[in-house]
Image (cartoon, rainbow, N blue to C red; front, side, top):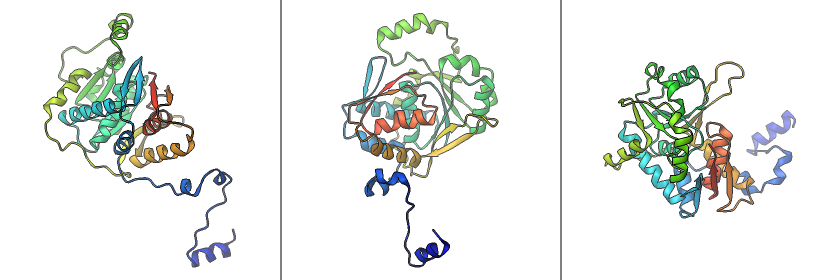
Length: 295
C-alpha cells in the first residue's frame, strides 16, 4: 500500500485489514474475537458450569470431575490465604503434572496471587535464583526436590514450603505400590516450621472462615510466570496475564473445532512449559475435555 493510500484511509477513518493468506480459514466472528475482562479462574469457572459432572482430569485411574476439581480449588485457595498468601504475592510451583500442581495454579489465580512455574529438574542454584528473582514467598515442591532446596531456601524470601508426594492423589493400591518402590527412598524433611505436607496444608483450609478470599482480577492482571530456555544466558521470568491464557483458550475453541465435551486429551507436556500449561491443560479444561495427567 502506498503512502497516499494509507493517508486516504486514515483521513476518512477507514481501517484496512491486511490480506493475510490465513484469513480465508476464519469467519468474521472468529476474527472479531472478544476477550472477557476476567481472571483465568473465572473464565474456567464460567465454562465448567456447563458440564460439572464430566471428568476434568484423570491421574493413574483416579477421576476428578469438574465439580470436584472446583471444590479442591476452593479448599486450596482458603489454605493459601490461611498461610498468609495475598493478591499479587508470588508462589513458586516446582512440580510435574499432578493434580496438586493443577489445583495450585487455579487456587492462586482465584485469590489474585501469581504462580511461578519452574522445572522440577532444575539445579539447586537455578531453583534458588528463580525464587530470588521472582520474589517468591512460598514454594509448592515435589518431594524428590527437597534435597536440592534444604540448604538454599534460607537464602530466599520463602517462608513456607509445601511438600507434595506424587502418590497423594493415586488410588490406594497405586499409592502403596509407589511408596514401596520409590517413596521410601525419597529424603523428606523432619518436623520443621518451614515445611508442611500437602494433606496437612489442605486441612488448614478449615481454619479460614472469612469469605473474602476470592479476589476479582482483570484480564490485564499478571497470572503466571514462566521461564525462558536460557539459550542466550540465564533463564528469564516471563509474566503472562489472565488475558493471555483466556485468549489462547478462546482461539483453541476455533482451532479445535472437532473437540467435543468429554473427549480425552493426553496432557503429557509439562505445565511449567507454556504449551503444556496453555494448550494441553487450560484450553482443554475450558472446552470440557478430560485431561490425562502424566507426570
